[in-house]
Image (cartoon, rainbow, N blue to C red):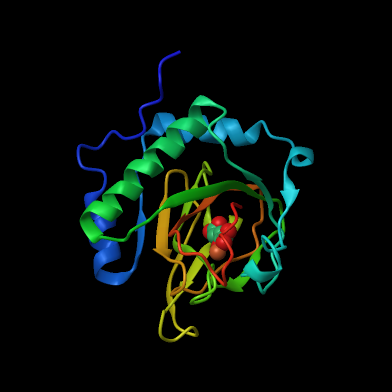
Length: 217
Ligand SMILES: O=C(O)CCC(=O)C(=O)O
Ligand SMILES: [Fe+2]
């Protein structure tokens, strides 16, 4: 089996690096190859809801970062298929690039597939509270074909200094990658009018918190 080539652009990282450096968030289309996106979409499409879990609860009581309600299904990603392996390898390259160019000291990356069925949403939240989490940088990769405005499910990003102010509203279209500083940017997912697939992930640092080693997932 030939490996899936994750990038087609000659310099895939430049725009993301500049965006994060300049404003702390980035929404980029075409970061990954179509081949990888198609393989990831096929991969998650084949997972039945029975093999996913209803999200909504934090990782453990003192890592509870989700205060508000959500109604998606999730499945954590391990490198068990060519698509998942290629994706995690690509995110490893991206992590090293953040460390090399922006000195972010990112230690690892964890990610899960998400499925929002018709009517599912995720209320406004931040992915990490200052000093309470090792999550530094959030990523969301969207996998949906032929998405129209009427399908809803947009990611809404809010200003880091004024959470009533919208930065933007982004449709979850195939191949779009959103990245933002986990502690800084409140965001929400508007109710989706059809099945919505994505991969949410977090680059983390390795500080131990309250004398506890940060648990995986
Ligand atoms: O799917 C999205 O657009 C965002 C998901 C999200 O905020 C999360 O999983 O923490
Ligand atoms: Fe989030």
